[in-house]
Length: 374
Image (cartoon, rainbow, N blue to C red; front, side, top):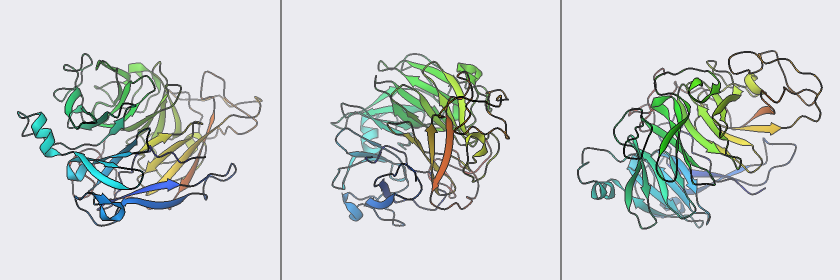
């Protein structure tokens, strides 16, 4: 299987994340934990800076999210440098947007910091980033404009009228719709190609752990999003310690983790534990890759049971299985609940971080992220 390069970088709880590391190699059908090797594509670990170049000669400062285009170029939200960087397949790093180019595009916003966090790229090579309380578009020619968003707040509507509050991760679907993890509004937002913003799930006035449809669902701190070929959106909710799935109709279910219960444990469904899941990506067969704040990369597999036999009725507001329910190869829930087992595997060793992070500036966490309760 070819590597999936579009997963986001973990917002690691370390003083510095200055090198971009890729997971490469093939994966055996029966073993997800050992076949990967790690190499550095660009930058140097523990050496921060702002320098273009090739491979380890380049420098980054707190890179947060990455995206990949159809030609294999990587785009990096280099938050600490207030820049967007591009890395060619050969490891050549160039800068495509900076604080200065932002000021040139918005001369009346000289008091606003360009601090890209989430990033996505479309088939035409247009790059989208979240910065401040807006979603910005950067053309292949380097022209920056506002794609959606205005002042901080919570409002759907046309691009110029819509409002976000600390938008974080981004993901594009095959139709050009852009999905936003609206961290400060406890919701997942959708931006149509025309720029019209709507709320897919959650609501900006209330947070929580509840599954459901549309505004009935509750998130605590949605941090990143990924979208599969069927239009399902997967969300890391770092404040609820779980992974959520949102269908194109806005139906939210919990795939892995136990809302309100953090830890570091592999397992199935709500038996798994996360410290603070951050980045997420989905591959072509529906496996999810999650960066967790305990310095691990977690794999959430989706395995169809061999046959339907007996099942234990799920409980709770999202109809998740109870702590004693286990769905294996001989049992499966009905189609109205979780229809696949979700099994956790980890890459790396877990070390408990010094607390969870959320967007802000702090010496303890990367830019825009500080350790506070939700």
